[in-house]
Length: 393
Image (cartoon, rainbow, N blue to C red):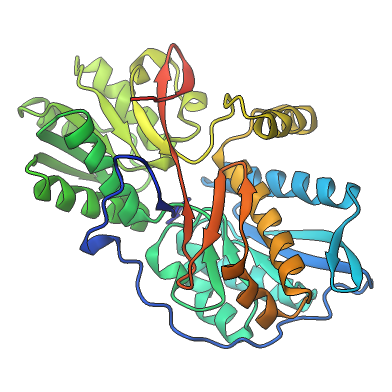
């Protein structure tokens, strides 16, 4: 994910999987596969996972959720006896640093984590920060898994993997949904032209809409930290648009949908995974009624594993977990599976094991390609009566 979260999945959505030229995530370059900090923490019998994400600043909610989800997984694994790695059983430790969703801060925080002896990296949470450290983590040869960074180039090197949606695939999937599933041909788009995530999703979306025979009748841009969207919405109101696509974060989505309602715009909204958490940031949920967005996780899912996680998260943090919390949780279990498969804590062995594991996670069952991309499914989430529900059609 971006200045903020960006996500990436090689989706297996029934009826909406469409891979065109823009979905290519790039060819993974072979990078260093050194052992990284194989000695890990100072304590023997432990494996130290470093975490990077925003814990302060405008994107803090993403990083905090990832951190808290990862903490639950670490505690759960250790309580169950730890991780069997060859002839040794290890306890996991998590050392999470604040990168403020900033590339410069991320580099400093990453170096500090490496100095402390981390043996694998969970992060970054946002794409911009991840792109800033990609070359360095490759040089160090450490296994890096982003739980929620969706920029395509985050997986350009052989040491890097992701758990989430890619921006291009999100755009294509939502275009398929708007044109083929919902049957709309005239679509308006509002996006942040200063943000890699929003722009990347938008570009794939508009290209796919045109390929499917639809028309983008308005393509309205805004800048980061904008709070007034009346100009963009007024322009859209003057078109024959049938639906509005907003590939942006929940803060932007809250402003846009609220102001649309104030302007008397009744068109339906669809969004990207950055919408997760929008209900907590809006005064009148009626403005979001019927909106649909992508997500790999839904807290109301009746799956026993999901409900157990939701209960634990609520008890520990007095909050309902979002997809970022589930991403953090699942990423720790992916690292556990890689350790068990490799039978080693060496980075080169863990990286090799990543393409040989399968993990049944809260965000879906997942395997990984040699390009670092996940094979997994995702959900359409609809907002109805002020609640998130699974969209079944």
